[in-house]
Image (cartoon, rainbow, N blue to C red):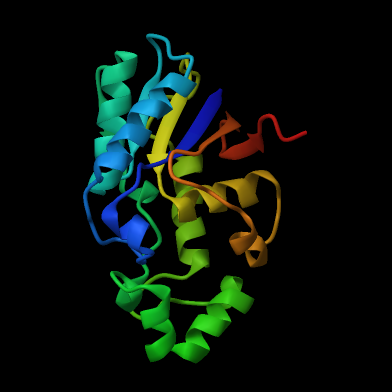
Length: 197
């Protein structure tokens, strides 16, 4: 079955370079336009199922895509929420560098062993995503594609899982707003990236 991940549209915090994580800023006007553009990339049919992170930048993106594609519902799933950046949420990288210079260096050099202060590690977030893939909110054997509206961090993790790459390569995966990543999902949670061969 085809499982596509898409990153939500932009927020003002994206444009300002702020760590968002579990904070919940809304889409800005450019983000809403990005969301409408996502629908144009899809070859949607009546069987398209939309699943979304519960954060409003994702749910608003999913709602705009659903309206454009004629999909009836969007299923929220907390496991698709962004990595919890803890005390860094709402801050720019320059602000983080002033307060936590060593920690920022460690995040950049060894992301696989880093935990955000008062937040999650990549291992935590990957376990959440793996649980979503093993125990999805759709019935096994369903017809049609699934579109999961999520966040850059979670899509990077999906790419690493599909390509069997280590967490240390997390920062090497670029996921711009509105980016669409297509995978083949199999029961049991296996992922294979489509169009990457």
